[in-house]
Amino acid sequence: MSSEVGSRIAKNSIFNLVRTLLTIPIIIFITPFIIKHVGKEEFGIWALVGVISSYAQLSDFGITDSLIKFMAEYKAKDDNLQLNSLINTAFVIYILISLVFGTVIIIVLPLIISTILCIPPELTAKASYVFTIAISLFFINMTMGVFGSLIIGFQRMGYSNLISLVSTIIMALGTFFILSGGYGLEGLIYNNVFITIFVVISNVFVAWRLFPQMRLNPFKHFSRKTLRLIFGFSWKVQLSSISNLLVYQVDRVLLSHYLGLEAVSNYEVANRIATQARVFIASVFSPMVPAASSLQATDEFDKLRGLYNRSMKYMAVAGIPFSALVISLAHPFVRTWLGEGYTTSAYTMQLLMLAYMINLLPGPGNFILHGMNKPHIPMLNSVGAGITNLVLCFVLVKQIGYYGIIIGILATIVISSVTFIMMVHKNIHGLSWRLYPTIFVKPIILSTTLSLTLISFNNMFHFKGYILLCLLSGLYLVAVALVMLRGNYFDDFDRTTIRRLVPFLKTKQNMQ
Image 1 (cartoon, one colour):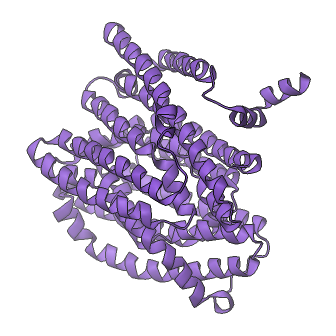
Image 2 (cartoon, helix red, strand yellow):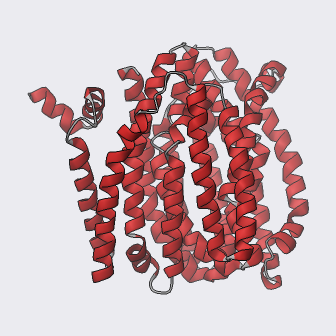
Image 3 (spheres, rainbow, N blue to C red):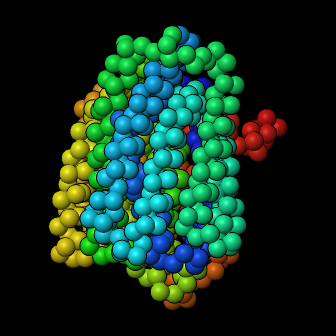
């Protein structure tokens, strides 16, 4: 992998990391504030808003991933004609999809609320109103997301992350003022309307700055050939998306149906932190899709193998210690965050974080295969995972109850992660199985030792307080960094990349 490609990926990864790091404290602050003002049941409805929107995302048909991939390829070839064809063709598709599927979903919404989610009758009208607006906002975001896809496809994650960060800050401030003013659940969805307007305007503005040759004229630039190109890639991504929903969204649907909104609320507070931690780690690697597409477009396949080997190592050194830290401090964190009475949420966070950590490890292969125009590989694995998870969760929630959902997710992820790595080796030639013990053993031993130490001390002293938890986290991460940086785990390429990205180290090197 060339130093130029590695540096570009690393810079985009840092933009993603900074955005996620700044977002997590906002999520931590805003969640208990919402629960306090709307109660557990209405917070459960608010959690289901995300689930409904996620299932509405099926109407995207994987087009967003397709746009990012082909925009990166055409950008690498400076093919402005094809870029305009992509933008206009996708825009027409999205408008048609929004009109058709948006109407269908809103028509069947009452059935979903009463029969599938089993929301109590006294909350049905409020849930219907909030869900209807949320679905409408989703389709607006999806249609205008063409411009956001261009920003990511051009590998300018600094802009997309800045927009995301500002929208999160707007969300937090709006939530504070709206709930303090007594506007409740309806006020939260109105806040989302304002955020949607901001994101749409920002994406359009930045996209035009990055690609001033862009022309919005479907009558001139719509192309059936481009349409076939988009769907030739996207239908494979779509099947993966359906399967991912069966793994990551069916949990709250089953909890709502069998155990009620309070169970959804207990699960959601844990899932929010575990998901943010997963997103934090995964954000490092999302720039690999456009980067891999660019390498494939220029036939640099040797660099793709290097990209996989290094990204797996970076995933191991980032994902394993960070996930172990979240697991070890879950109970004191929940105690500090929400107070007493949320022990179930703490155990949920630990189990979900273990599952998400395992799921993250084969993540680089998923990103790279998409960039190589081989989305059918993760698609096949995702289909198997989705079916397995649906069956396991459905059976176990009836047999075991609440924790049956989490056990089903964990078992599914273990099986699918192992099978996916095997599939990656069949499709990226030249990979060695010796890579995995080399990159996994040291982070696992180190993280397990430090985590067990933290858990033992917590059992003795019952940690509580954000300052103490930050101090313990800092000491943990310093210990991980010191141990990992010693020896030959990182080679010269790794250290050169670090020096390029950290101004202090670069300055120090120049002085020497």
